[in-house]
Each structure stands twice: as structure tokens, then as C-alpha cells.
Length: 274
Image 1 (cartoon, one colour):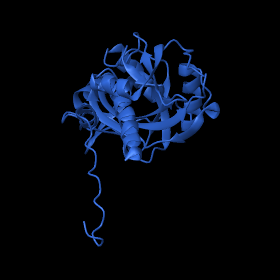
Image 2 (cartoon, rainbow, N blue to C red):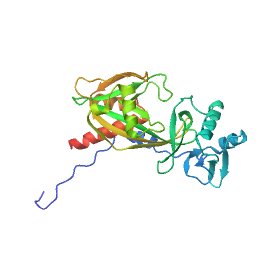
Image 3 (tube, rainbow, N blue to C red):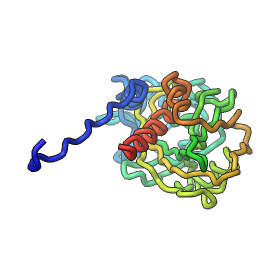
């Protein structure tokens, strides 16, 4: 190579097949049978619903009204949403009752109301989760196995911590609460705590449609500190070396969300080495 020629850049790494598959699975449109759901007749779109289900709910006396481009909750407010959630549960449409409230938001993520967690996918509502990608002091990757009685992905492997943002909570409050409940950790005591890139998951699921923004944090546990579950939602924790983590991800042992998050972390580390 002559002195005037620029240095050749190393080719960009190709993502492994398991990560490419996960990214494809996390970006799927709703089936054609779903239409927009508004909050009030002329209010913002908050989700999506199957027209036949909206017709059934309206016939049962629930506050749904048809519009030119979908359906609307005609009587905005927590009480109306609570009645809708209870009806969906009684009709066997929703997953098991969680007795947890999640925020109902507009297109700018502004909170409008709150609704029972078990019906958010039925109504295609946007949700927010917080995950912690945790490392050990010597570079291992801390992961957890979800309890076998979890409503979603029972027994599968996950990030060190992951949980839904509850109604009335900030992202930081969710991080603190879930870190303590799931892993017995206090975020302020972790090393290098910082935000990674958000992960978006939009895909059909058994209950309806999932539209979720996952806020990802990364940090390292100090030497000698091990996670301890406090809410009964974790079977076990393991600290994996990178090769073992890649092997388990390739085998499909992790949740889709954890696969996306940990895959991005592995890509970042590989880029830093190049």
C-alpha cells in the first residue's frame, strides 16, 4: 500500500443468526384484524384492538365507540378502564389477573391514566420495562432464571434484572424497586451504572399485541457481591463467561428481550476490541 492510500477499515462484524432472528421477531406489525384504539372520541391513540372484541365489549355495555379509523374508549378515566379490564378478565380474554397498574400513555409517552397489567396486550397499549445488564468485577455476565410460575416466559433465562414500570413511577424508581426485589441490589452501590440504548419490541403475542420500550442500564457488581432474590420471581442466578453466554443465547434459552439486550452488549464489547 502506498503512503497516500488510506488505511483499510476492518469489515463490520455480522451479527450471529440468533441475534438476527431475535431482531426480526421483535419488529412485527399487528395482524390486519387490529385497528387503532383512542382515548376519547377525538383523543390520542393509545393502542390497538380487534374490532370483533370491541363490538363484544360495546354490546356488553362497556364504553367503546366506533370511529372513522378504529375504536375509542368513550369515557376516559381510571374507572372506565378498570371496568374494561374486569370485563376482559371475566370473559377469559386477558391473562391471569396481576393486581398491578401500568400507565396508559399517548404518542409522546405522557401518562393519561392507569390500567390493570394483565390487559395491556389485549388493548395493544404501550408499556415500559427496565432491565439491568449486570457484569461481575472480573468480567462475567450475571443472568437470572425466571420462576416457573411466571405468567410470561416461565423458567427461561433473563438479564440480571427486568421489570415493568408501574403507574406513577419514574424509570429511575422502577430501576431501584426492581433491582432490590429481584436481585437484592441497590443501584447506587453498583460500579459504572449507566444507560445503554433502549430496545423496542413490537410484535403479536398470545394475548394481543406487544408494544414495549425497554430502558436498559448496565453496571458491574463489586467484588464479593452476589445477587439475592427477594420476591420469589427468580429461581437462580448464574455468572457466565462470555463463551458460555453466547452458547446459551444461541440455544434459545433466553427470553426475546434478554436476547436483544445481551446481544447488543456483546456487540458493543466486540466493537471495543476491534
